[in-house]
Image (cartoon, rainbow, N blue to C red; front, side, top):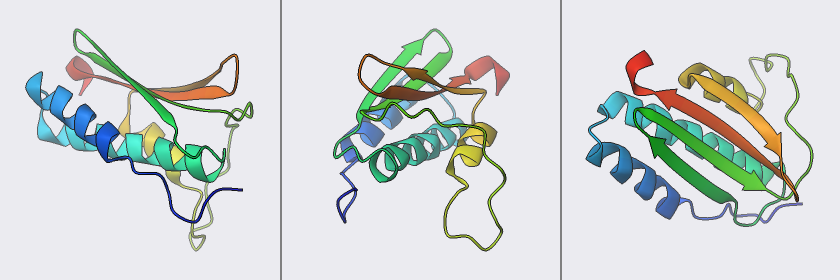
Length: 122
């Protein structure tokens, strides 16, 4: 079970946006990365029960990879599209549509859910 209030993701968001802006990435792609990060961060808190998910950001050449790590070993599985009237269930669909690649990898403890954006492919 997770706490009533989600953890503060301000530092992760700020670092991501500042890094991409200083590297000259366009604002629309920065916004996509910010929203995808938010979805993964909230999912790690809400569904995996992580009080403070670990965020890893790597920018290599023109490729961004953002991983959000939690302690739950359960990997996200294929999901059916959310009911139009449901209050949740669209987050990973949103991440998939905003990014060029998306996945999850098991870790020694828990998992890392990640996405990639390629500047040339935007």
